[in-house]
Image 1 (tube, rainbow, N blue to C red):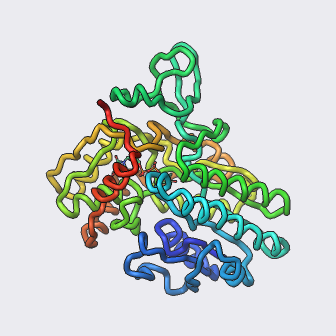
Image 2 (tube, rainbow, N blue to C red; image 1 turned 90 degrees about the vertical axis):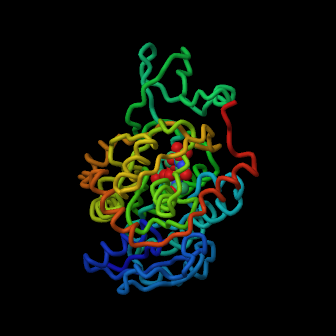
Length: 373
Ligand code: UD1
């Protein structure tokens, strides 16, 4: 099959390209190779069997060239920083929302030849995950209360009785409550893709990625995922900066499992026109992640807990992966401790300029941090 991977030079996209090439597909990549992610231009890890078109998803001409002869599209191209999206909203909305619209507009014109579209959605569109209240049962709170955050109460209270909450796995049925510009743009990407797919009868699947990690995540990009940021800090013998108190939890999913979900969505029609969570199903706190990475790197560095919250961040979210299991036969294969081992073997062979402090200053400058006073 001839397949287009947008963002195919990036972290998830490049791993997906490798897997598609290995399965005998002819792969084309459309990637704008932005400096923030690719300071050295075209990455060395890009599969030589893939055809690379350097171009912007917002340019219809570039998209048209990329779609020539294509039968399936994986849309991984996006701006990805939650914090950065809050002070560069136009950049995020034009690339993610408008860029996706341009792509879908061209896909629609080729509805007779394109047999599948798989779009990278995100858990960030949920906002807070699902919780359980001992008194009220299952609840899905919206955003955190600023006054409480300013007193260092990072956890969210039950919106009904004000009592304590326990995070539980988040299902696809949860009401969406995006808490950042990035999250809104991801919700747009997902909904636009599903709406256009349904309208034109082009089988489309939205994969709601949880927190991806693995080799090739851009280390010098301070707006990338937390694992890469922490690795880059420690590679430069600096303490990772932990926002809030480090007890916030996420679901870290190895990039090979994200690729697995993409391949299943291509080969299977059971999830067509639907959104599906792609995670590990296991929560871990950010403080624990910092420890795990330091141990694996053999660094005696303790993280610095800033007691500051990044505006737009949620407290807890872990995936319920039963829908992916049921519809796609998805089953995560890589445990975090094994994935971290592989990640660190790669990280220690890299050099990286650490720019996390700079990114934190940028947030401060725009008053996008909430400090406990
Ligand atoms: C991440 C991705 C997003 C993706 C989503 C789901 C990035 C920038 N964000 O969002 O694209 O859609 O997962 O896969 O890749 N943290 C620190 N210190 C740091 C950086 C982060 O403590 O230096 C904390 C954050 O406050 C947050 C957690 O780590 O609580 C995770 O942050 P991050 O990696 O940015 O991920 P998400 O915002 O969850």
